[in-house]
Image (cartoon, rainbow, N blue to C red; front, side, top):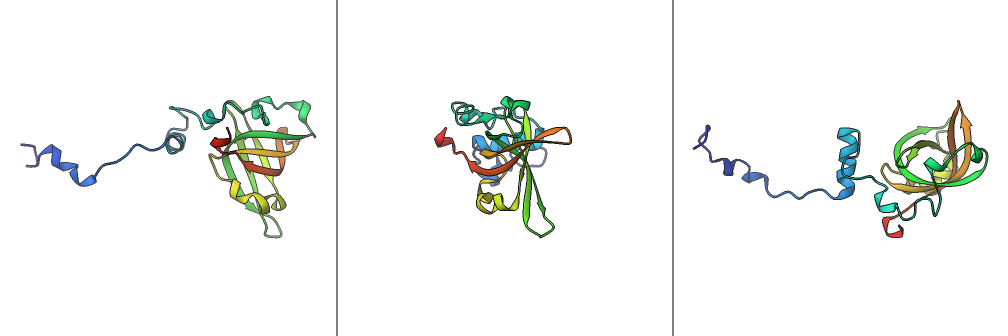
Length: 151
């Protein structure tokens, strides 16, 4: 007999059965609540193609400045803003295992690619590498989501 006259087995019986989250959901929760990934990394399913279809963020350096490049990474941050003409524009950040880089997406680019853009998706960004305020960034011209099946 318990302290509150109920069996300990009956206390949680009304909650029902729960199932563990899938890998993607678990990784999102880890980053959201702990600030780090513990059980894996969003790019683990893409190791076979990273660096083959495009550069990784870690491979970027000053030699690519001003050149058109393709970069693959996962979306780690999105900041949506409006231009003076009230069109949507996005400042986002893509990351790989070690580094991250800011990506600027103007309204003309977003018109065709908005569905590919959400946090924790793995994307391929085509654009020109630029330097602003001492930091490298990519002026995105095209983005495309990469699915794990392609990896």
